[in-house]
Length: 199
Image (cartoon, rainbow, N blue to C red; front, top):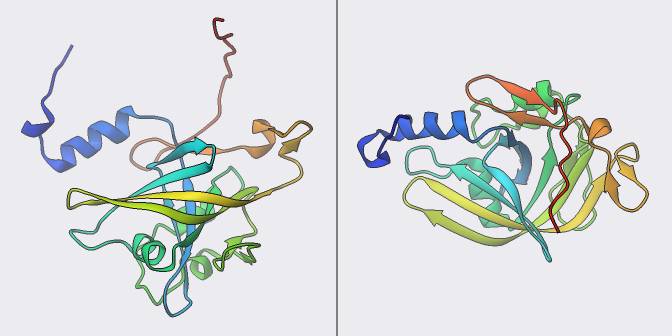
């Protein structure tokens, strides 16, 4: 087995090691609003659940050099954002939003996505997602000089009827969530293996 000390590797080497091994990663498509009211949209795969009581999500956003990305800056300023689950039906358009635009330009318009009004927060979501979470910023943590870790409290759920089942369960086949691998690669949910937990 090969063994590496991250201190002996470049940031790029550590990045490649992590995104190539921590797979598959769920993808959050995040909408936020800047001070001029422009709606920003961008995908992030450093994303997961933090807590169910209260319901919280985390999104980790790498900086451009030492400057925060538009999404992180908007969320830290406005304290609100919307997280969407990326799926088979929207992944192509969501991928378009990864383009580097100026803060005055909207990735939503560029990708041909349509805005959906939110119920609690001022930031809209997009209609092309089967699942979206309205969030308020609970915690913002700067990690080193290169990362903004944002913890959002979910204040409203929006789910397509086809993914929501009796008892509050989610039909993952109908959701068709897509995950991130490395490079330009994405993955769908493949073979499902059921293993009972021991009592």
